[in-house]
Length: 317
Image (tube, rainbow, N blue to C red; front, side):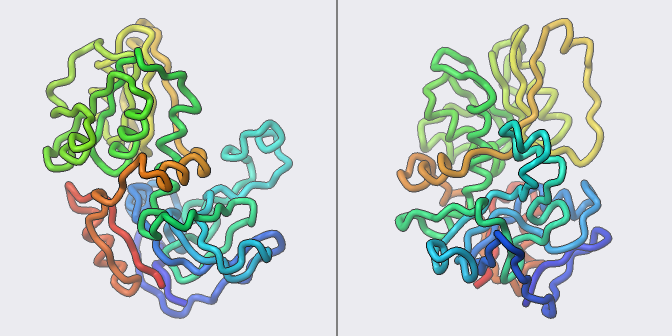
């Protein structure tokens, strides 16, 4: 089969990869679409020493697996867990001590014609959700995880820093709460996607110091962190949604003095994300900036790395 293979920070299209054989309790999925994520770009830059097929945002059709899933469109949670470590036993499987992670840690990913995942990771896609839209399930679930970690209300003043793919999804999910929300970024054309949905936006320079209860950092760079941090009132909460390729220098004393709560946030609830897509409460179509066949995957990565580009999709089959 064909797939995009990463090794020694070099990405290449391979055409002779063996189709995987699903182990017991796993399913073989024929991939339809897969989305290029910032994490994929960071892995290519050396964020984590990974070798293999990249990709973790996907929709596909089950070809081998339990009867109720065969020939069904599915999306999949990316963490394959052991089920018996302390985190699995306490209902925290995304922190499984023995997990593999689709296209990220010790498990081949979705930028190929086929992938394998545990059956328990798979979620059927509602019939009214187009396949292109379904590829956003994983990052949308990650956006929803904020609401699992932080008690938010309509009275909260919330800042989202970043107008990229993740920032757009975070903003749309937070807007559903009815909080006093502001999204800031560097690109008027991207902020316009949110303005069209009635979400207040501005350029990053407009953020007032110590004016927000909660800030969500979605840029993955030091400048975005600094904006999100200075925007918080004392005893505010700073949520980090992005992975950082390098080290981040912070003023730890100010976190102590202002008693800031710092929360890392990543994987989230797939059923809730699929429900939002099925009901149209979140609109992802404006975020798609390009579609490429798998055979042109290297060109797709070039586009995805350009400044200002949102989501690039690979059409696998």
